[in-house]
Image (cartoon, rainbow, N blue to C red; front, side):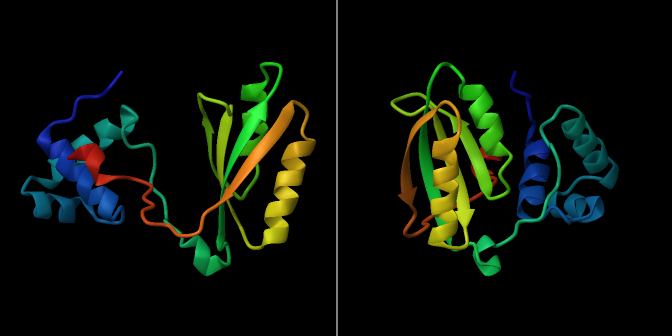
Length: 153
């Protein structure tokens, strides 16, 4: 069920999305409400699961993970959830999506080399219930955001 957000909630979220290290005092100053209002609303949004946590956004390319792959996976015998859970454990996997269409899952993962990507795909293909994969290597990224301001506009 969707949580209803008022304009102050949305303003707070916009500020946190742009910089989660802002203090409640600074957020309050920027949006024109009291620090107590910000603290109470953030606490409520955390309790309701709107805010699930705070994190650091790392530039994967600067750490050598230059290869981004989008991998479609076809899974047999109704074992989609089990296989997806296993794939999700891999440290270089950024996302696992359960999808409709000809593929059962879509994986987004980053690699330091073609050899690392090749080994990953071979490991996928050796997994029980994985029938086949279709691997797409990303050539250029035009937009990549973890959190979109659109969600709170």
